[in-house]
Length: 261
Image (cartoon, rainbow, N blue to C red):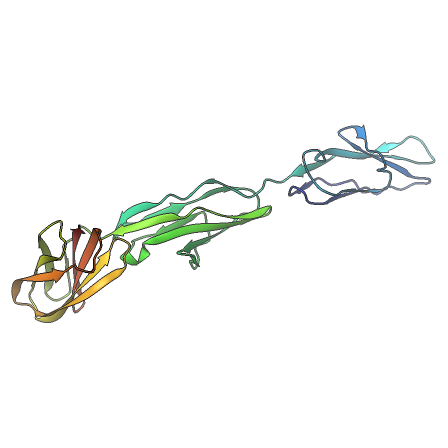
């Protein structure tokens, strides 16, 4: 009156098959792939650990006081795929203000995703793709994705994201404009000279960051405005590599890139 049901479970999981029949003097015999299973002579058959040797097609032959015997429908017992990563996320270098997309590909059942940056979970980053429409220097870091599935959990390899400063050398504000031009030397070691111009008179600072967006030092430039002036920016705290210098005056920003040797 009740047929055994198909089952899909993780490797080494326990599985139970059940058949229900009516009649007098009932006897049961379970079979796997048509072969009699010794000792499997009740209405319930349990598999202690699902593996390649126990997966297959199961049915049950039921006999009673009255002929003929009845054979249940075959129930397919299958091993669900373990959670696995088939394509790791790939590190990339992206220019500030440009979009960023990281992707992980996984196999398994009931997959769920959680992206992290530098080991900390990212809010709402719960799909196979992680996207940032316009990156900032603060988006640089090591990204990974934890994947939870019906048959196990796994964490991807880390993908290193490097954000380089924008190639724009000036940015207009609502009132007045600020621009900056690198004069050199380039590559630099102890210092570099930046030409800065702005119409308004405002206090300004130079913020030096490395390629990962970490602020190395902040230099006060005093009040600037009324034309172009050259400023000597110290680089003694910088290590070799690409750096950015952000010139800030009020709400306005300008950027230059500098290679430090």
